[in-house]
Length: 116
Image (cartoon, rainbow, N blue to C red):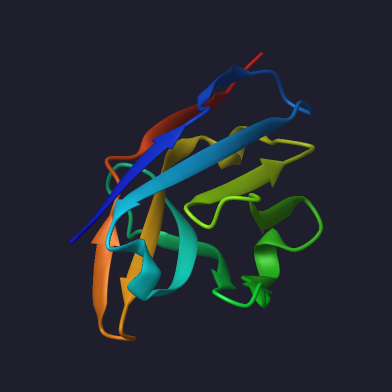
């Protein structure tokens, strides 16, 4: 079992920045990758970026340039640095941990609101 908790969301003005954190606990040694997603009410959950256990990163094309995924010094922490935020970045942001390449665990999400 893996438990994931996101934090760092909030209200930010357009053009601003936020850094989201995801802290994992439980059987994290078996996690092969972690990822960020976001979801707007009424729409499908959207993939943002993935980072593997050996720090290989991949991004959705639409997220490249403004968003950066990274891991902390502790293996159980992952970040999403978001810059130049736009109104359309408003969403609930979720982190995911994958175990054994097949089982996904999700956090409860953190709200990011971009508004003037």
